[in-house]
Amino acid sequence: MGRYLLTGMIVAGSMGAVAGFYIGYRVHPATAWAAALELGLPFGMLGMVVGAAAGAIGDRGNRPRGR
Image 1 (cartoon, rainbow, N blue to C red):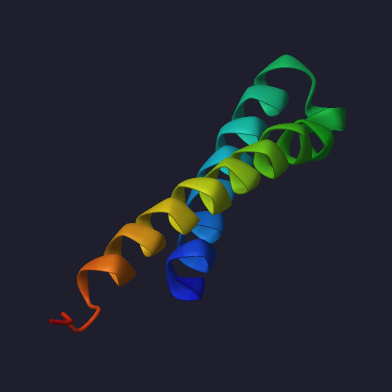
Image 2: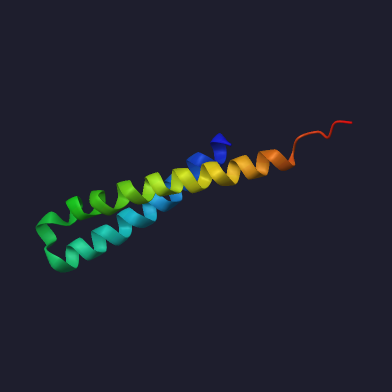
């Protein structure tokens, strides 16, 4: 589950940071770094939640079956 959580956080956070930097640079280049943080952090947290859910579902399918 941890692998999925970390992967989701990195992928979604990176995409959010890139989108925030692009939007911030188009609006006001001096504060583009702040826009990258403002979008990157929430997207990273959302990626953690989605990654944790995917990991829980994936781990559930790998359990040995009992009698």
